[in-house]
Each structure stands twice: as structure tokens, then as C-alpha cells.
Image: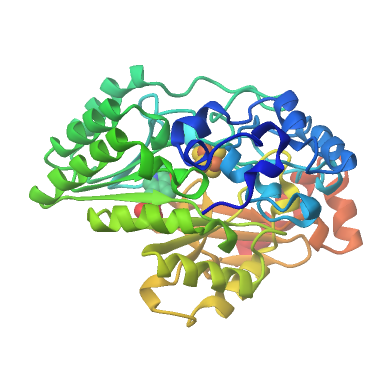
Length: 426
Ligand SMILES: *Cc1c(COP(=O)(O)O)cnc(C)c1O
Ligand code: SF4
């Protein structure tokens, strides 16, 4: 069922039953450099371990990894491994951040009417129910809040269960809200009683027609669904009650690479499917992980095979210390063209750019400046008067443009003096 975990000296005496149990996985998750060093002792080269330790001093996310994920990584090819790079950065691969990076790039904190809620679109809200996940992804859009503080990013305490009553009150008194995204953070870190309570509180609000529970556990700790009976029962009880009320409750998850769709994931999906839980996937487009058509097509086919519906492919947002993952918009557009048509239309994801005024189709830019790699998007349903920018990584530009972005006051000089006048004319 699993690749051989006994190759890690720290887990050499662990039985399959233990390894396949969510509480063993939680208890043995790696959250400190010392544990990482011990775990990698015989499987990874000393240069690799050093490179990761150096990389970790330049990121906005703290480390957290399940032994299950550690074991999916091919440590003999750690440098090019698409799973390693998502969770453990190497100093040698990192690039300087784009000068236009802001810590909360989607301005979620400005669109928060009460703590833990983001209300950006007319009829839906994002409810951040917890700040912890079973793993921490380097490129997390919510790195301003999720996980522990790092050298680069001091996290504000933006969410906790104490915020729930006020957030639920806001939803109750805002009848336009018919759709709730329950994210964070990760549903898998909530107690079964909390999942049950939260789900039922939302179902009890008449104008809430549908909601989604977000969890990455299916990709990084799939045994959660097989061994945490109480938690799965709480989830399915909410889904079942929703069905009797003609309301839609689904699960959203996050797979980025075909190798993450393992036999245990299939088992977890067989269970969820038999209980009538619909699952959608959101992928982040990441350079070196999934930025080629074959990898994306394989991912989509494998997800479809286990009844996970590929919903979105997000172009990677600007997040501190993760510039090396980003792609020019033109590459995202061309990948979308290559992917569409490979399978059923309903299993073909939309490729999107997320902006402070909402998600936009990658093909829908109002304007693109090739020289400086700037695209502008408009969202009529959120704020028709505002244009939001996507910046291509500086590495993809000419040497003159790279120099210009590297100069002092680059943002003002390029955006105010070059891009904005062009836009005013367009
Ligand atoms: C992504 C997001 C949603 C959900 O958007 P969908 O396109 O329906 O998946 C809702 N609120 C916020 C703030 C979001 O960022
Ligand atoms: S699982 Fe989601 S919320 Fe958690 S760190 Fe990864 S991207 Fe961020």
C-alpha cells in the first residue's frame, strides 16, 4: 500500500498498521529542523539536507510534513522531486521576490467584515475556521495567517474557534450570502464535534444554499478518511442532513501532481464516494512541479479516475520566498490550451488568476505589456472600476526589463509612468 517507509531510520520499526493510522501520522509529523535532520539521516545526501536548512531560513511558511508525504518523495532525486519542492524549499532554487509583492496579495484582510471571514463576492464568503493544516505548503496564499511565524513573516492571529459565533452571525444577517467556503487552515485539524457543530449551524441558516469544506488531508494524509471514523462520520452526517434539506455540501481538496494520487487516496475516495460525498480539486500551477502539459493531463486523468472533479488550476500567487514557482501568464494560457479536450469537459479545470477583485480566467486579461510582463484584469461583479495586475516573473523578461525592475522605485517608475498611461489610452 505504501512505498517502503522502513528506509527512514527513524521509522524502521513502525508497522504498516501504525503507519496507516492518522493519529500515528499526526504524532510523527515533522515540524522542526531537528526532526527533519533525523528523518533524512540515511535517505538524503548531506548537501541536500543543508540546502533545505538554508532554504527554510528564507520562507514565509513554517515546516509541517506527514511521514506519509516524506515517504512519497524520491530522496535520491530530491533536487528535482515535485513533492519535495512543495513543502521543503532548497536555497539553491530560490529567487528574489518580485518588487510588487505584498504579504496579503489578495487583500483578504481588507475585505474582512468580521474576523475570520472574507466577503469579496456578492453571494459567497470565505470562512477561515482554523490557522493550522496537516502540512504547510511553501506557496500558500494565506501564508500571512496559516502556520507558525517565520523569520520572514510574522503571523497575525486571524482565526480561532472563538471567532465562529460572530462570523456565523454575520452570515445570518447577510441574506445575499448563499455560498460558504470553509477553509483556513484545514478541516482535518478540527475536532469531529466542531465539524458537526459548524456544518449544522450553516445548514440552519435558511439563505445558505451550499457550502464546501476544504481539506488537503486527502492528498497528504489520506488515512484520515480510513481511520478517523468519528471525524468522517461527522462530515458525512452534515452532508446527509444537507441532502435532506436540498442543500449542497461538498469537499474541496488540493492535489498538484499525479504521483500524489496513490492507492490509499483511491481507498479514501471509494469510501467517500460510497457515502455520497462529492469532491472537487484545486491545483496550483507550480514551476518544476506541474508546468508541463503531460503532467497536468496525467493529473486530471488520475483525479477523474478516482472521482475527484478537477475544478481549478490557479496560477501561483506572489508569496514571499516562492518566486521560483511562478510562471509568466503566457505559459499558463498555453498549458490551458494543451489540456482542454483531453477528457470530459466537466473534468477539465478552469485556469485562473486570483486577484484582489476575484478569480479571472487566464485568457481574459484586458491588457498585457510584454516588455515588463504586466497583465491587467477587471472583475465586473466585484469592482468594475478597478484593474488588478498579474506580474510575470522577472526571470522571463529581457535583460533591460530585468534591470528596470531591479532599480530603486521600480514599481512607481514602471507602473505609474509606463503601464498606467498605456491603460488609460486602451
Ligand atoms: C475563491 C474564493 C471564493 C470561492 O470562489 P469560487 O470561484 O466559487 O470557487 C469565495 N470567496 C473568496 C474570498 C475566495 O477567494
Ligand atoms: S494546505 Fe492549503 S491552507 Fe494549508 S498550507 Fe497548504 S495551501 Fe495553505
